[in-house]
Image (cartoon, rainbow, N blue to C red):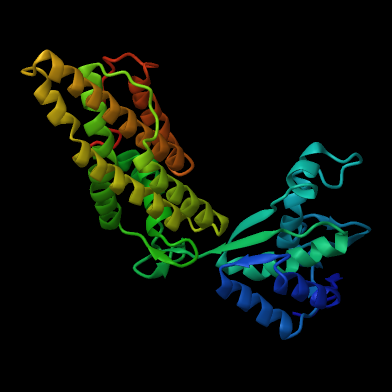
Length: 351
């Protein structure tokens, strides 16, 4: 194919792009993708076509301003939509453009590895040409695969997420994809792996933790001031920090692994505190001993409730529906919900 088109002078921005990436003004994550982009830039950037003839486009697309014989390439216009959607190009500067791009402390993109060149080379060069700020970070993720092959219509291996969400719940599907598909690599999907995560992690670890504590609290009508115990503050602080560091690099799998490490810790604390044993010892206890047991019981539930609340807060961005349900159940402990509320497992057993 040989024809006359309009070109973008990418070669003009070669040095500026290289400097921005090498100094981390524009951070590309993970490092392997950063190295890939730098190698591309160092090999030399060529100007590229941003239009095609209207005849070849068969009249479909946006005409080049001032040249109706040419049509803008869809992908070239699509990149600009990141800002035009915020109001860029309108007569008056919009608040959204100012808030989400021009004045934003973090301007982050999450893109698939197949379009790294477009988003980490072409798009920043277009921004430089327009005199606009660059993204602060571009996170590049891998593909979800089936039997090692990229999911695609042409491959005949597409997986419909709607029946899966109906069978397992949207949060369960979301959990599997975020935790068991590593953020920056390809990851294989199977229903068997999804079910293993559902049963072994969501039911056995997370669901069991909340059910054990809140079922006793509801049955015994326990109301306490939910707070973290000094014993648990160090672990919770370490978990918060681990989640923050993971999210700074969009490593969602690492963030969820840290949260579930806290879930495991909380399950061990339940075994240590043994609230069921305290409840069992209450009825035959003498009055003096009963006071001591009740104090221990309330202290235990206050501490365990504090751990549950922290876990819910950390899970909320990943499992929003589950976090909302668990928050209502935790309210039993604080007296914000009726003590006779029925505790229903958030992840029911599979049929």
